[in-house]
Every structure is written in C-alpha cells, then in structure tokens.
Amino acid sequence: MLSDLETITPVETVLDPTTDNGDHDRFAHYARKSDITESAVTGKPVVALCGKMWIPNRNPDKYQVCPTCKEIYQRKKDAENAG
Image 1 (tube, rainbow, N blue to C red):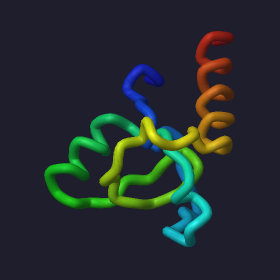
Image 2 (spheres, rainbow, N blue to C red):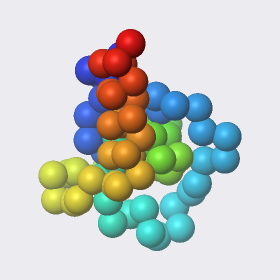
Image 3 (cartoon, rainbow, N blue to C red):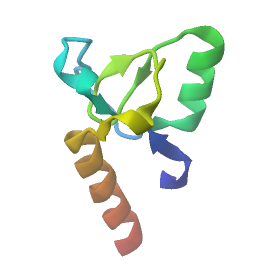
Image 4 (cartoon, one colour):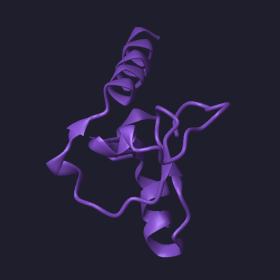
C-alpha cells in the first residue's frame, strides 16, 4: 500500500538497481518506511522506487524529490485509485 512510503525512500521491482554514481545524490527518494527503519538498525541499503540503492543518512527535507521516484509513485497512486 502506498501509505507506507515516505520521502527518501521498493514498491516496484527493480531489475537493475543503480548505485551511487553521484547524480541521484542530489535528490530525496521514495522508499518503504519499514526498509528505512531496518536500514537504520542494520545498516542494510534500501532501494528507492527509481532503483537507487543507498543507506539513508541525511535529512531528506533539504533536497528536492527525485523526479523518477515521484513519477512512479504518482502512477501507482493513480492506478490504486482507479482500481
């Protein structure tokens, strides 16, 4: 369900996740809250909707939301509301 998503933060299966190559570091990403919490405890990386894999360690409020994450989230939300 989409209600468990928050900014910085997989709802969609990503076949080829990207890694830190710099470009995605300029955005806040969407990921599951439970994945973010697990990462905080274990240090395990999370996968954002756009496929970025990282360990959350900064305040997402200081960054613009990733356009790809935002688009995927909106498509899923629209599909959920239509169904």
